[in-house]
Length: 321
Image 1 (tube, helix red, strand yellow):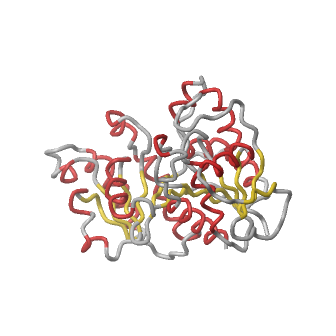
Image 2: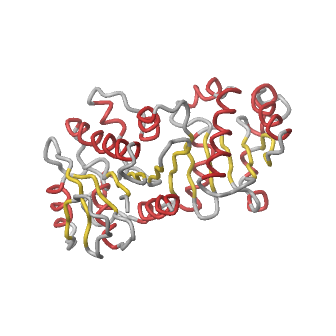
């Protein structure tokens, strides 16, 4: 039984806290936390949690309730909860490197990730734009797609972590083809949806309103969508985002394709924050993640909820099956 690895993320944030929450689980497959053992034990003591941390040495069985498998990744400097330290950026990236290496080399079924703090990694002088981009580069694939999902809604993104002023130029016909191809393929293969129905947001208010509010829909987006529709793909033309997310429109949809990060994700997170999962499509391995950030102010307080990490682990295990 190959393990599923879980990165504990930014050590000054709630990543270690929510990873400790996985000790409540009993799974057939080993769940292995990538973290500094001593730091994780100190966080458990601080939270008054009785958790037996077991060094992972290739065990093929699940831990019992109250236990966690841990692969030790040594910290560079001692952690103070809530206080970012750029010196520990190398520790965070080592978690990602190991998790990607194990998945790519067939030593795991994939990875679920706790949150990292992008700003502090960049402050350390390391160019880093996020988990998604890191795994894409490691895997050597041309394009990946970020998709967040709740039990009732999936939202994929054409663009991800870009300043808003850069979004229109990034939406090209080539990029749309790449994103849609990956979305359809992974809905087919990973989610077993043979003929997915996909609704597509326009870029501009009212989807451009016939060119009066922007011509991207007419000149870039709809020609691509029409080509897929001509092939029999169940896909809308660009729709106004302010009405697309109504229950009536969504009732038969398998996924929504949004043009940029804050177009689709606020709607999804308002429906299921804490129970949504971030999935990276287009990778040659499974990668899921929580739907929230590092929440530095909650680290070590006992107020952080592990629900999103539980759901991310559940989905990764389902996809692995």
